[in-house]
Amino acid sequence: MKERGLLIVFSGPSGVGKGTVRKEIFDTPNHAFEYSVSATTRAPRAGEVDGVDYHFISKEAFEEKIKNNQMLEYAQYVDNYYGTPLDYVNKTLDEGKDVFLEIEVQGAAQIKEKVPDGLFIFLAPPNLDELKARIIGRGTDAPDVIEARMQTAKKEIEMITLYDYAVVNDEVQLAAERVKQIVSAEHFRVNRVMDKYQQMINNFTK
Amino acid sequence: MKERGLLIVFSGPSGVGKGTVRKEIFDTPNHAFEYSVSATTRAPRAGEVDGVDYHFISKEAFEEKIKNNQMLEYAQYVDNYYGTPLDYVNKTLDEGKDVFLEIEVQGAAQIKEKVPDGLFIFLAPPNLDELKARIIGRGTDAPDVIEARMQTAKKEIEMITLYDYAVVNDEVQLAAERVKQIVSAEHFRVNRVMDKYQQMINNFTK
Image (cartoon, rainbow over all chains, first blue to last red; front, side):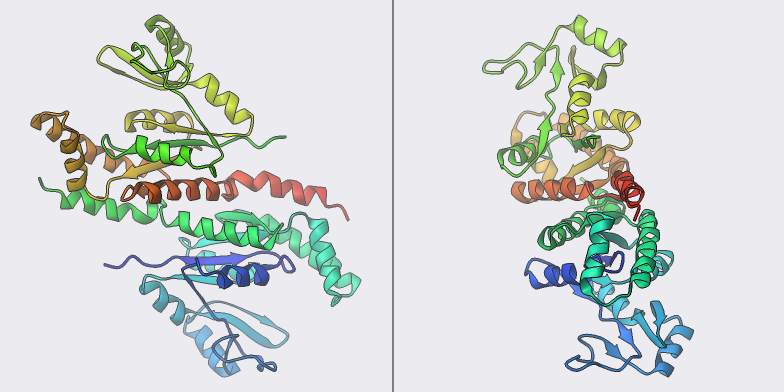
């Protein structure tokens, strides 16, 4: 029997650099997991490819999936749905491959309830002042929005107890390396490999 | 405040190759932990150095340490005591350094009771037939002793549930690499770093 893959849930506050670290992980050859492409009901932007950047589906199709419990997690922003379709995740895990999700903290909390034995990794800023500087640096948010984001970030960091590991994004390469080490090590957790050792004992008859 | 070091307890059945993997770990430059030298009441063998191979102490001194709870674990074999003195371990952990213990399964079980938040890593054979072949290969044991060792090994593998991780010793270099990955990853476990993130929130006042 093939060992089932790990569901890796990679999350952290908005602005912390999840996407950059995820890209760094997937750009290096020595990773061994599959990236789960999210589904959305928003229209593709210029250059976005269906099935690569997102699975672009209709609002009706998305709501049908929600109703049939076919979304591992989802959220609604500005009239559009974003979420993780369950079918791809389950199929890939069944093939013995690890699946990597990069999602918002609220989505991670939804998954924690459904898949408690997933591997939950939190990406944290070096400190909150630096997070604030990064959000300001993006130049997209008004001061009151920035203030609201910081309050959310604080609450999200308090949700760290839902996670198994927390990695600081002080340097993108270092953070990516840490995530890869965590995933490698997790494959040796006793609760994940116990059956194998029970079999070892059973198979020894001499 | 300096973060306290990790107590790494590395164990596994007799004959599995704990010493060889430990030497491989310590022979490579990219490890960052201290090896805890055991104490014993047996006489030094030719070439053995006090404080390097063992702390050679008298039976009276050893029993005094047991009485005063100054042994993290100990066992008696053929009239001699072997054990891990607590003072060195605590001093090194307080300095923020990780301490690496390579000990027998019974000793590891003693430590698990005293230091439940230690990092317990089990070294397993690829399978029990291979373990038996290795023990026979050493040429030191009579057939009935080998049989007894195999029964003990089976019981020890069943104690795997006391451990956090299990690593197969299929190849010494691979096994050593896995142990190092596990130790690196463990430093990012949320239950070990939670205080740091609570401080991050407290330190942010803007």
